[in-house]
Length: 309
Ligand code: BDR
Ligand code: CA
Image (tube, rainbow, N blue to C red; front, top):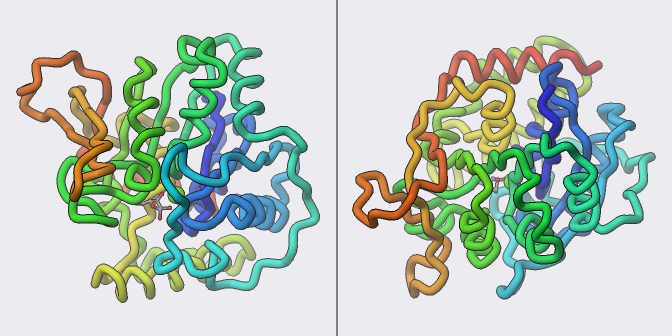
């Protein structure tokens, strides 16, 4: 089993990533840590609690983390995820509580106590991960790998140059990408292939199961905002792709290359500079995904979602 920590900002697609990670038989989900991103950290932590409570995920500690990027003011994606960060279905208040530990401390403790076998799966801004690396650099050689949703080889989705998670906290991303940890980057080129089409939503609904129906409702809200903001006909479920890449790395086609994070550009801050042609002559530091095995992805995700009541 792959032992992972999911560091997230739920978030419609984060919630789905969480459900995949908690029930897939190849994953041992050690902790859920939350960060400011799609919404405030209070809201993303509450949303993680709500999803876990509803889905009866009771064995996984949930910790609240950094409330803003390292240097920049917090900027949320309310236009995509709504005022709650998880708009759409009504999800009851949780009957679970956060752990008292700060997410950064929980990440450090778990990694330091491990045999070097923990994979971090960040699906939000990289603030918690970067803060943990700065607070306790000894974790860096003990992290097995990082499989993150973020960045783009080409166009961004928040500015023309930058993808949301990296754009939120470019300085944190620069720390993580420069850490020397083995990184798999699951960029927009991959996640924009994971489109939750009408027939996917129907398959979930037809099951008549509670969690599948809530996911279907989340996808209907997500479809609406993606239509309005980007003109997409179906919404991309970004974050589960980063979990899927841990479960089965062959679900991605990828290239190893050097990636830098732009932190100073007037128009390009938060851009992931992917040196596809090796023009910088710098050592490769990231395995960059560029294509997804779409049928296998949906098979994995839907099969797992249907294991919930
Ligand atoms: C990323 O931004 C967030 O809105 C999503 O949850 C995903 O992690 C996509 O750019
Ligand atoms: Ca996210």
